Image 1 (spheres, rainbow, N blue to C red):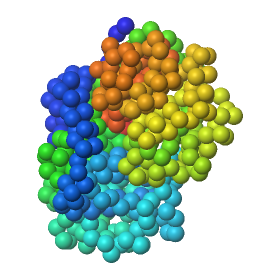
Image 2 (image 1 turned 180 degrees about the vertical axis):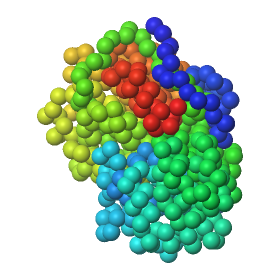
Image 3 (image 1 turned 90 degrees about the horizontal axis):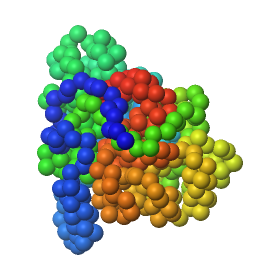
Image 4 (image 1 turned 45 degrees about the vertical axis):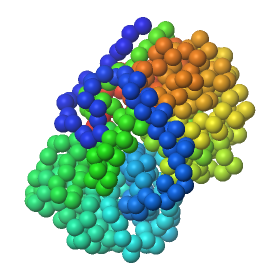
Length: 443
């Protein structure tokens, strides 16, 4: 029984919203805060909501080849803060885009249909060829240019600062950062910085998937202030310190070696937490696993908890015909409840557990899906902190990632990358997990 560091890392300047403690445990104060906030939201009278100021309007364009983690995390975090986020496809005539790593996303609108709207923030996700599609889209360039000329907030991450904003001349004279291998593509007029998130005036830039959550919380702070940013960060169980060493708590260690191309099932449903799903799918596909995304609904498209539209590969009935080395449940209250009510899915997970095969869950799903069906019996686990009281055995729940033999569990959106990298380490070894963590600029 040991706590093992998954990867060592570079130090980082503090990001707004990050607690100062270096511990990988979630403090009891945070749990109380989460439970208090949940009660307050449940008891808020309608008139209290009615007096809220108009939400900030945000545009997040997407294209074929957009990095799904960067797009989904930004949209999700900003919607958590109360922003009205429009997800717009720049692909002509197609609202559905084939994002990177085989992730399919459906936009709310085509860019052409909302190009005349006013926004408080425009944020460009990275990924290639998504960023070059942005660069070559004259309509998007005009929309962003007019927005910047009005002195409004604009932002980009990963390849997009260099490929799109830099090419358009919208970073000239500013301090900016981007994905490490694109730094030399920043125009000479730009003051290149190696910060995880860089703010200069009304421009915010960042480095990659592993900095996307920090970047998104900085955007919340720019739109709504520090207090809101800290609230959002706390509820997501963000890492106490970004870019530093992270760990999993492992008990009853067993080999997870199931071959070079493990077959992994990730079920999604209406109400699934989209950040958690996107990170799990994206990271495991980067590690060369064969990930099948299955919809529990009667169609492939699901509307996730923060209204991101994700498109599955297959319906659950089709997935049931296959054998899987690992079944992973993202969280989200609505999604976890849908999993718990699905006799077919629960039957599949029970067979998996009985055969001593691998399974896992994050956020609400350990407490809402696994625990009531006896799938945590005799196991140490964790879940979303406000749901620890639903776990029969809470002895290890303060750990951000818990591995007990063939089961892995984790706490929430802010632990999803650690959860996914711990799975990579168990399946493929520490070296590949560390290599991926560095590629994503997580460490």
